Amino acid sequence: MIHFAWPWALLLLPLPYLVYRLLPPALAAEEAALWVPNLEPFAAARHERSGRSAGRYATYLALLSWLLLVLACARPQWLGDPVELPVSGRDLVLAVDLSGSMQTEDFSLGGSTVARLTALKAVADDFIARRVGDRLGLILFGEQAYVQTPLTFDRRTLRRLLDEAVIGLAGKKTAIGDAIGLAVKRLEPDEGRRRVLILLTDGANTAGRIPPLKAAELAADQGLKIYTIGIGAETMEVGSFFFKHTVNPSADLDEKTLTAIAEKTGGRYFRARDTEQLQKIYALLDRLEPVERKQEIYRPVTELYFWPLGLAMIGALLLMAREPLARLRRPS
Image 1 (cartoon, rainbow, N blue to C red):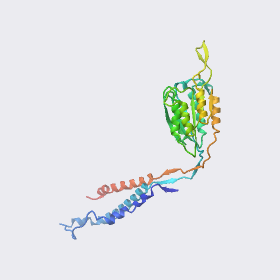
Image 2: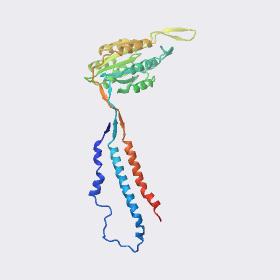
Image 3: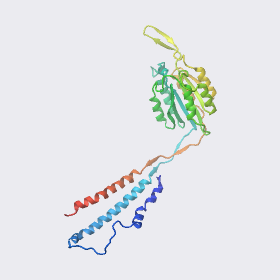
Image 4: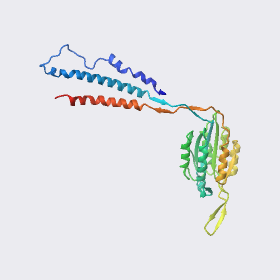
């Protein structure tokens, strides 16, 4: 159906008539008679009737152009059929660690050894795609924490921005407490929505102004549930072709703090040692119970104002070109 976003603009339609009726003519006749030295002015009398006809058409064209211009000002829109959007009533934010240790290649993906962040992106991409009905957000943190994507239903944009994240973008260290504090600030209390933070890191808090446990207490006071995921394998072979030894690439992972953060907020701590475990964790998070909420109705809107606006501009151009064309046609 056709809808006008600004219907009050239609009140401008009678403006030309009001100007014509209320304002005095631009050139008022001051004399009742016209004095001429000879009869040459009357030689072109035969052209007056055609001139009057052309003037009448110009008036109609001007009125039509005004009508189209007013219609464009009213912003006509085409409203599509109503579409029901499933809304779970849950705000879910991913907080992803971009510190230097996330480039450690101890994960396997598609038969190849990849960095932790690469595996995280691949698994999180499917997880985000399944979050129909959730409002999603993305926080990236390293030495500092910042909001990469505010809460949105646009899962495609969030997946793209996560894929574009690179190691060291927020610094080489890890500010877990600041990431939680930023999530608390962004996820304001709402009685109708459940608020969840999924924090993924492979280390310990080595930067930031807010201690992680203090940030967890603030989150608990605000009703924010935090699920923490520790990323990284426990064994990894390093060395040259002839001499290799096994090391623990996750020695710096502070599982005690991550567990305490989750427990303080009513969440859980998960350990992802490889890609398969990370996928299982996301599958478990998929089963989070949403808060019941009615579906929202969305009607797609298509703007139509440019059609009458374009026709009005064409009419105005024809009126502007009328006098030059008349001069070309007028006999000398």
